[in-house]
Length: 74
Image (tube, rainbow, N blue to C red; front, side, top):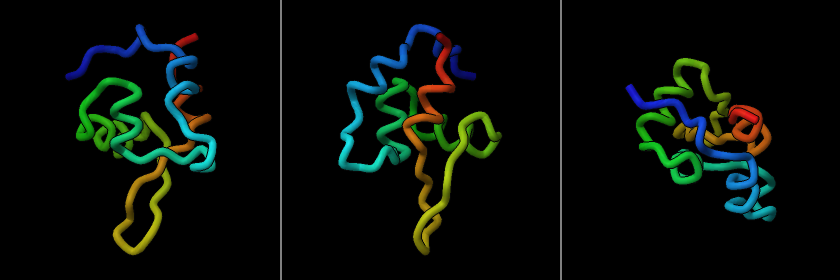
């Protein structure tokens, strides 16, 4: 299992997000920002650890920037 992500801060998330995306992040963007594997993002989404939304006919996951920031320890 992956180690806790206590070393990351909300500032890192804010710096890495383009405001033009309306604060929605893809699985890859979340993985990159948290420095974890995309499969871990999907697993945490399935377990309800990370809140995600399904969009489009394929059911792609999208994450709100605010939810990822609130997930991180202060």
